[in-house]
Image (cartoon, rainbow, N blue to C red; front, top):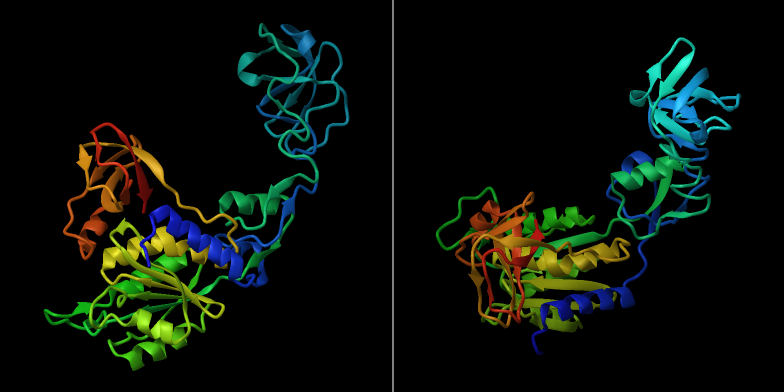
Length: 397
């Protein structure tokens, strides 16, 4: 099977999951528990926003045609109050930020721009109709779409839900993701490994990534490098909504994950992607259940999940458009690589500039380098060199 370019592999994942995955279940949650969940209903404005013209400043509601000049103050209106009177020629009403603009007024003059007199105010400022007024319906009209189904709710989404009176909201159920590390060399995190052993960091880093993607991780026992052990645990993992394996997908004598999956009747969509780290990467389906076989080196596991497998978690959780939040930053140093692979390399992003500096690393087992990084520099497969000061793609971590 030919290795796919990075973009083609990601597009294939999205297409296959959209085509064959069952629709996620819907559940009703309290608004206080909705942050980070994926909206399963559309939300529309229940009235005009704002429902009446409101002042954007503390000051005085006036008729623009009366300024500049001296005006008589006839009343006061605060936020949360209704004002029954009318602003007539030569009059002003003191008004607070957020208060409803009285009938007859068509502008607000800021309190900083007036001088108080015995019976009113005086200003040498001109005004235009609409100054410092938020008109009725200027933010949204009744019935306007505010939030669409498939959107992951952040603090702004929560505010909109509260604004339309939604104390509970329909969201998609979080997908269950089984995580299966493979390999005889793996020992538990709390064990002291021998020189030929490694602690099971992949299962826990993947669990953190799954949770960040909105899934519910379930860490399975380590599958040893035997057909029986691997088959038993893969079958167990396929009871979840998605199975993510790490290790056992290269071309070594004991890399048996693909053999076991084939024996279970798997359909394979691809088994290599032209990226570094992480070229040996398997994506397929057994029945209705999708699986990923990620490389076993820790950085490869992290990168391939974040850039490829996460899209499936997003989709299974109801996300309409799985995000891949690349941004651009200026290189602080010249960077070159061998074209042919899309590379995701540890880097330090300085957001304010924004600038990015590649971090020296020792390859796909170097978790320490990733720990010192806060982003991955993204080197396109068809370009060899970027000079200092040039823009390059970055994936913040």
